[in-house]
Image (cartoon, rainbow, N blue to C red; front, side, top):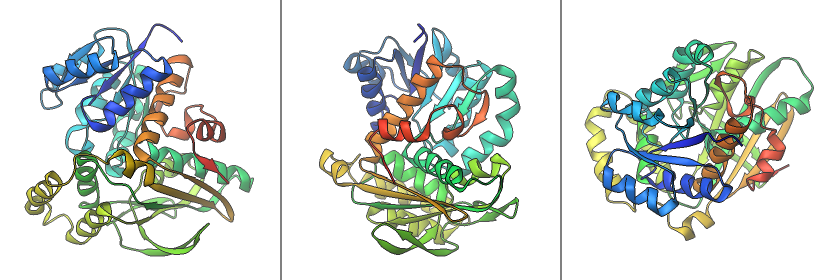
Length: 350
């Protein structure tokens, strides 16, 4: 590894702290950044970061401080990304720095792909949104399913999630609301169509039996659409617990009521625990099924938050050490071997 380092933006949050702990364990040099000086300094001391920076997306001029040293990869953990993510990724591309984030917000992923692809190529940046449990695992699973099919073109690729147990952090809950309470995109017969979360249902064959899932606007749709070899792509979700309630509210209220509901949702979120407890994280389970014209791959694991930290740290380590393809990419298209990477972060592949 070179003497370059990663910069963790949003390091004072729950996911940001897990990312810092993972980078430290892997021996990846890193600095930390956030909006409040005292909290950022506390994080720097707690995790042994090399440097601390105060930066705020609401004040774009402060973002230049994120790239004032040996930063080669920016890891952004500060959401909701639809509200505060754009200035950060734009600043990273302008600085010619690689960018990874933990967003689960499909409209943000498409916006970055559509508007920053050319600039990222010109600046020599590799930009990957959703380098997390959602949606890296699904993207790798889809890639494995497509490889097993031995086809050059695919009529349909489907990725379906089953999430049980566990809990969500405040940041995740707010991101779920921001994403599902607005129109998103499906990929049907070679074109994007505007859809709303839950507009369709589908029976999905999981290893534990067939289950009804709701259509969900996930990032794999954008990833697969950009491959140029997939006619239709769809993502589905089976979910339980508090996140299911947010999904249900957001999917039915739509865009008109979103401004009215935002303070109510924010108050409800604030009344919940700030983040999942260690026991909740251990109890959480996910199963992700990817199908490509008859070919099928199943992945499974637990602790989505811990896994997200492992995945994005592996991505940062890879970008610091290798000459990855430039431009806006998906997790499965930056040179990491899917099966090997999934195994290394504790995900089972069938």
